[in-house]
Length: 117
Image 1 (cartoon, helix red, strand yellow):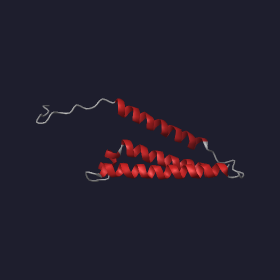
Image 2: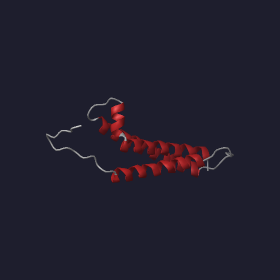
Image 3: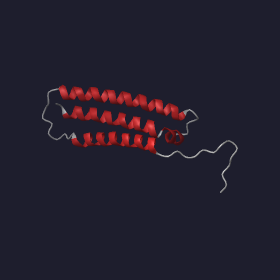
Image 4: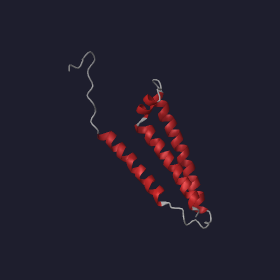
């Protein structure tokens, strides 16, 4: 096993997971930050999913190649921080998904109503 190659693949998977998380939960905020128009959030969501799929797929392939290759003398390469970061990002994604489903909705006003402060 070549640890450097596996770590590179895990880093690609991290980038893919981060891209999907940002595209799923923060697309509106990112569209406003980048001054995109009305369809900006939809374009960011599509681009985030596409980029996440490409990075994640590439990361899986690179990690698999690294696992199958014969290892050299790579004692200084540590995989634990990258694996822990990937697991924590995975947990964060599912935490945000849970919170988005259980968060109360803000009340909407009927047409023609106004708020008196």
